[in-house]
Length: 260
Image 1 (cartoon, rainbow, N blue to C red):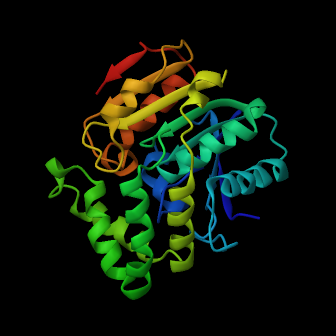
Image 2 (cartoon, rainbow, N blue to C red):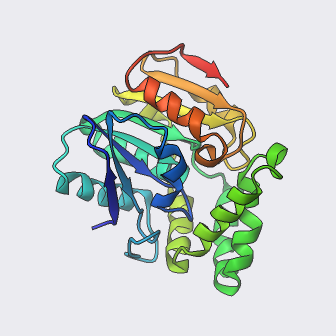
Image 3 (cartoon, rainbow, N blue to C red):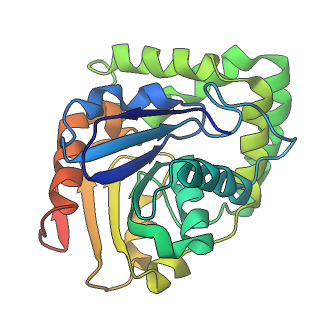
């Protein structure tokens, strides 16, 4: 079973799925601001953190099934699911397979759109780089995930992100890259899912094309969208604001689109 950590004893289970080359520790700063009404279930995805590598390719569907094993083991009937980046892709696959247990789904700096051909090729070419010089791969990729406008202020958090990435099993990194390249477009989940859908995006996100995502979000009363003044890593760049949005949205209603 996937490694997972539980904190709090609130009435609402909030399952947190980290992104690519991350682990459960990325939620530490945001956790301090999340409501005490949550029980947090932080999960290490396959090949990340303390969870093992299962196979050569970790599809997002496989990851979703492994997350479901944790949910079943904890005997949870309804959950709120939040996924950052890769974790968002896994959340969409989870919503497709197990929609009946979702009270809400949050795409946290993630997208429903599949990789285009260029991005797929970049992921596949990265496998050789990861094998030959993993540290260089980390050093060149991680800084681009933060807002260019605040790189100096965020220097310490960029180093933290690099260290977390470097601690990730190389085979797990490769398996996730190949799995992400295979994932299909899941925009229809936004149309079909009856649970509350929360989308938190970054205006300066270099990994997710926020403008393109905003254009395809359907006009539905169960969908709320927030665009923050940051890059791809809101849990480090805007932890307090992100936590406030999550706290509010899971207990109250705010205007449909909200710009911060």
